[in-house]
Image 1 (cartoon, rainbow, N blue to C red):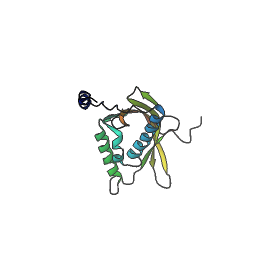
Image 2 (image 1 turned 90 degrees about the vertical axis):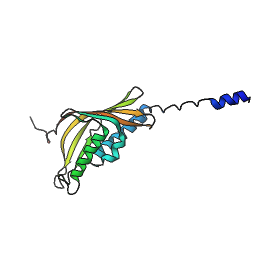
Image 3 (image 1 turned 60 degrees about the horizontal axis):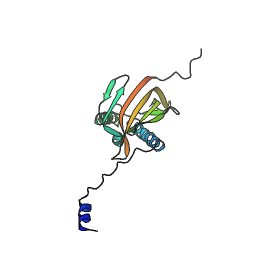
Image 4 (image 1 turned 30 degrees about the vertical axis):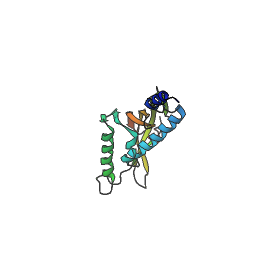
Length: 178
């Protein structure tokens, strides 16, 4: 190699690493489903908001049909959940309170948003624990749309926005007869 070629090679700027592309639909769907399960477990039944904080985009915001914008950042929703979990802890004003969220089977759709994210839409139900005698009672339900942004540098999705809507009471059970 000539001295000039060696000099030019040494001065060459390394090619920028190409950020990883968003996964194909099947893999992206599996990741979103896993994130969804972890997210709702942490905020509801598991009451461990710190375990799900990493799933949230720093610019996260939540819009809710009944209350407007209850959370305008990841930090805000995690801190709010910490307070709620502290209320449920031994000695807290809501000691022993338990609730859960369940995905309505077959209701979820996940689709691509260009090459930058995924849209998840589904229905879910909400339940409260009423003690050993009664067990879990459905208290309501709703629908949600989540926008998951692909973060190439982290090679994962983070929840950017949550739209929670169509909230309503639990349907009567058994159903009323006409």
